[in-house]
Amino acid sequence: MDRSEKKEAGKQSSRNKASIRIAISAIMIALGVILSAYPGAIPIGPTKVFPFQHMINGIAGFLLGPFYAGGIALAIGILRIGIGTGTVFAIFGGVPGALVVGFVCRYLVKRPAISLIEPLGTAFGALISAFFVAPVIGAGPLPPFLGISAQWALFTIFFLMSSIPGSILGYLVLIALKRRGMLESMQN
Image 1 (cartoon, rainbow, N blue to C red):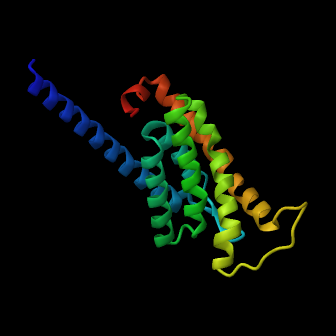
Image 2: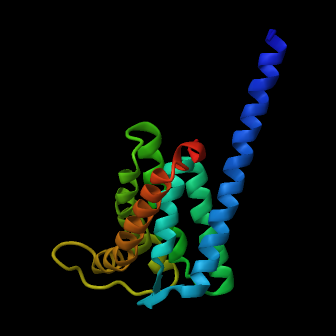
Image 3: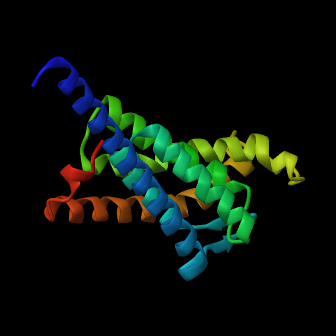
């Protein structure tokens, strides 16, 4: 094989990987939207708890990296808002968790168990929601509790009610894919 053939083969391989990532992203977005309608999200306070979003975040962050995972979470959040199965908090509760899993998998440790750290990003999303989003939508401030904003505490509880079971589901799916031997062929 001469240089030009190797270069062309490298380009083809890169295009194939990009196509696979886009296909997996589309499937995950569709899955997130379908699961938001059935079995659906659980309304709690101003949020709608949706563990499957966090499951998808953990899987996408592990398989595709931070930017695809963040894009998938953003797309699912926007589509959920559009069809009425989500609120504006779907974006701020989902995207940070996907980014955290993706960045940790990309730069630190590449193991399925890393999908279990998705709640850390979601807690950061709760902070964003409490201090920036809630006032914009007209939610009045709550009195401080133990020196922290009561809204942040509430949003953290609401978001973690969704994120912890979702990250566990994501981990279980990744383990199942690994046992089937499918994980290696799907990774970036």
